[in-house]
Length: 119
Image (cartoon, rainbow, N blue to C red):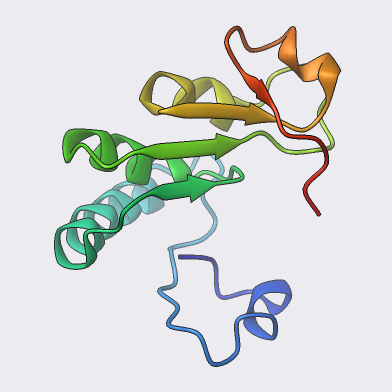
C-alpha cells in the first residue's frame, strides 16, 4: 500500500502494489476513500501484520487492523526528533508496537521501542 508517486513506483516495480488516495493531509474526502480501501483490502488480504512509517493513510489501516486483531507496528519518522507527528499521535492508540528511530523520540512517546535509524 503506497501512493502512486515517483519515489515509490520504481522501487516497487514487479511487486503487488495497491495505491492509496493522495493527498491525505487534512483531506477528509481522501480519508474516507482510504478508510473504505482499508476495510476492503484487510478483509480480502488478511495480512499477518500491518507496518507503517507514517503518512495519513496509516490511520484507517491501523484502526481497521485493530478491529480485526491484526498486529500493527508503527515506526515514527526519522526527521522529527523534537516533536510528535500528527500521524504518530493518531495511530499510537491502535499500535501493537510503537517504534522510534532516535533516543530523543522515546521521551515523546511513552512505552516506545528504540529501533535506531531505518533507511
